[in-house]
Image (tube, rainbow, N blue to C red; front, side, top):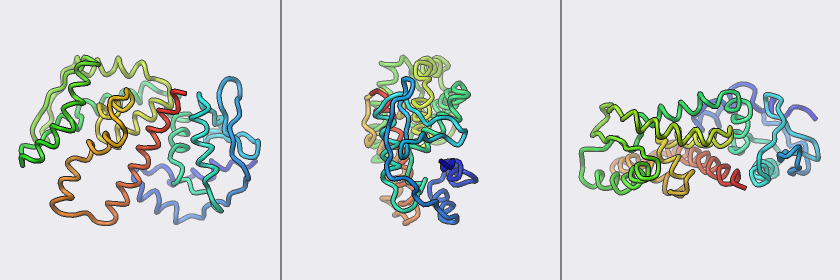
Length: 263
């Protein structure tokens, strides 16, 4: 079977973090036709491999596309099964995330862990508006419970600041998050956490979802308190709506993968 995933991911089709530019890039190049009838999952050496018409799928790095649990592998198989006449990788967020985990995160999980910690050192939840009062109240309602959870469950106490001026977080708080993350070094889990962190601007929101403290929708709304406030004041254009929708799709895919990895 031809290396369909390498064909799909050559160039910048999937590398751009902006989902709108990613989609535009995809539209500029012809999509490959669907060449398989069925997508399925098969157990292989204790893992679960995705197969197309009984043949193994490989990542762009030529590694077998295999996941730790059957449910997780089924998510990828379902994305393949959902393709119509053409295969559109922009509609396959779990596949993109799994490829990143296998070909990238697995080679250096420590670097990914440290990048999440860098986000936590300037976490979204720590930077508060000084007004208007209704926005301040919304931030407190959405963000304070997560900070309280981090302090009680992780022994990580974060310092708040008004405005955008950087505030130094206690080393003990960052170290506590590092210990927590070190117990979550599985490449796919770490990849999902990293994606959720970058999409929300908050490592704390990502970890709260992973711990079951927040639902995905709650975390997504919490990450967009400021943006939603601005939309209420000034409105929103169609491109911004499309970009946010695509990013939310990536977020939900990461959460779905985390849940499926639990078996």
